[in-house]
Image 1: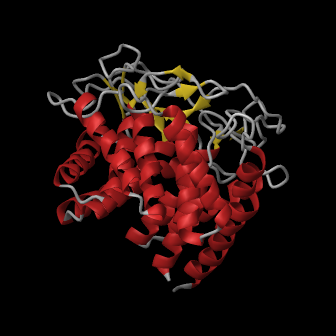
Image 2: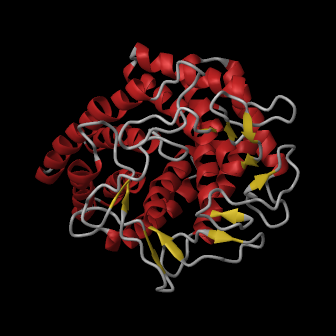
Length: 404
């Protein structure tokens, strides 16, 4: 271990453990449990006021299940296991659609179906979470639930003509014109974001279920990213496509770029396909290099840019910073170029200085270009979840072990 690795290792280890145990997890344990109606509150504002009648989203609840399962798997703290159990039972008892299969997009605050469409992004997050919960329970029923979603997604979302996955279906899994994931997204048939999280979910599922069909689907997803979603001209991801894979967006999302760099690599490693591993390792480095220009003088990674020069978003979102530290650290392990380790440390320092709220807990949703928190955003909500930053802490510690 050289001097830079020793310095970075000591700093990043302290960063990860401090953020995880003194900031992120205590917030979710203290403020988010809904003791009146079950599960977890749908929204908590920046001032810690609780929106008790906010809708409860599937993505938030699945990410909570993943978070406490993953943390329990490593540290075996009883309170983490209890919250994993709580999340699992709330999802299976309230979000599950017993008539058509799959899981509702959202519920009312008291647990009744609200938005019932089957957004593939959310369905695969349940796979991702169920697999993590299965790892700590060894309950075959849990694994079977994950397999069931895999089959539903393949039967109803996979495009057998043009490849890839259609964004969403109606409640009964019939085609829908309401495809977009959120108000910020385009209403197109296919997106990078959904495919990234199908890739993530299938990677986790293949770890525990060595099914030949699943392996083929995982390898296919890796190739979709390598050959279609990654723009060969600039090594940034293309965000939206029609069903024929014609690009429909010129926006560059630095957070998704750096997240994809390590998730693609992880997927290739789990596939155990040597040719794919060699291909993706080269591509992961190129993708990482494409993001370095998005790091500001203060050390944060900006939200997005535009190939067409029509739009720039210089604010810093919490999840982008989390993924950046992991992505740069992962690329350092691949390439051993100090610039990646320095980038990882730079973003982690930015998080400590500007993004982490060490007084009230958790991380701010967004900070402006000067690092000032934008307090109109929530601390917990449909999209503000404990998964990106918790996972970053766990992945940082894992990768530091690989450097030693």
